[in-house]
Amino acid sequence: MDMMSMLTEQGRREAEAVAARPVTRLLDHEGRTAVVTGAARGIGLAIARRLAESGAHVLMADRRTVDLERARSSLPAEWQKRISTMEVDVTGTPHVAALADYAVERTGRLDFWVNNAGIFPPSGPIRETQVEVLDRIYEVNIKGVYVGCREAARHMGRGAVILNVASIGAIKGQAGMSGYSASKHAVLGLTRSLAMELGKDGIRVMAIAPGLTVSPGNEELLDSIQQAGHKLATLSAPLGRFNLADDIARVALFAVSDMAAMMTGQLLVVDGGTTV
Ligand SMILES: NC(=O)c1ccc[n+]([C@@H]2O[C@H](COP(=O)([O-])OP(=O)(O)OC[C@H]3O[C@@H](n4cnc5c(N)ncnc54)[C@H](O)[C@@H]3O)[C@@H](O)[C@H]2O)c1
Image 1 (cartoon, rainbow, N blue to C red):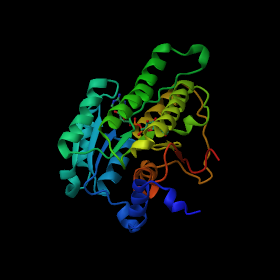
Image 2 (cartoon, protein in one colour; image 1 turned 90 degrees about the vertical axis):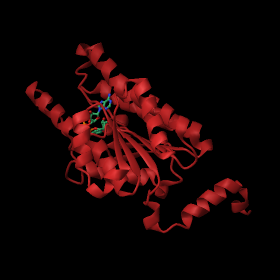
Image 3 (spheres, rainbow, N blue to C red; image 1 turned 180 degrees about the vertical axis):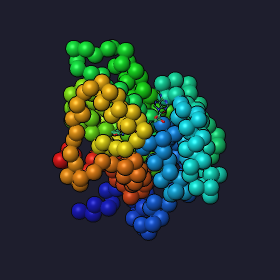
Image 4 (tube, rainbow, N blue to C red; image 1 turned 30 degrees about the horizontal axis):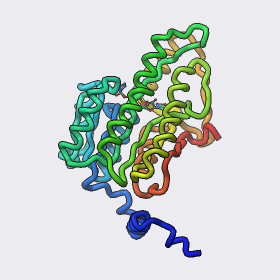
């Protein structure tokens, strides 16, 4: 059987064009446009940095305006003309729509959208959980990501990629963090469903699951757990260290690049082997 003849003309052309490109060009995103939410610090900033390094125009969005400007100016001067910032709270649906519109107005296209903004306050033991904490977690981690996917998909065409930052909490439980873990399981369900829905349009939808990663937000969490007198249940990684934010960013770059052109709906776990 001639399997090649069973591909659609478009599928064959796209696959052959990727296969013909040298490996260094597969990570070259010159002329592409990326949006990263929660880009003022931590994992989002590291992802924005790698995307800018790969040549993309990067629109960094965050609700922390001061940190956002500091983050932008921490990036190399020669990339600055390709980087812009926007104050956005991902829980405000019109803000997220405006973010997508701005990206397209500025560059005429939208190739990558990284839903990274997320919060991780402990919801605590189930018998004591305050519903308000759950509402906050779900508002940012589920609704914010959902609306981000919607607005991105409205502007994207073939070859575009949505990347959702989940967590190893999307595949395993953690006592005292049930609200967060539930929200990240939801991100995985959303990723898989949208991959099925948007595949026919040539849009890939991926997720990444960081293990414990050094970031300002995580340091604040660990401080608050210790101050509350709780013992930290540490997860030990076979590779013997925590992630740095750039460990996540390099895999994020792979996930959106054409190196991964035939991957969609997948969760890439970056945890030094913690969950193996
Ligand atoms: N650090 C970890 O160990 C770890 C592990 C697994 C998953 N994650 C996920 O990675 C992502 C980034 O985490 P981080 O550790 O870099 O956190 P961080 O707190 O250091 O940075 C998060 C950024 O997101 C922004 N943000 C939060 N809510 C927002 C909102 N409503 N609108 C716009 N921006 C908002 C914050 O202002 C901040 O700049 C989150 O989705 C988190 O759940 C982190």
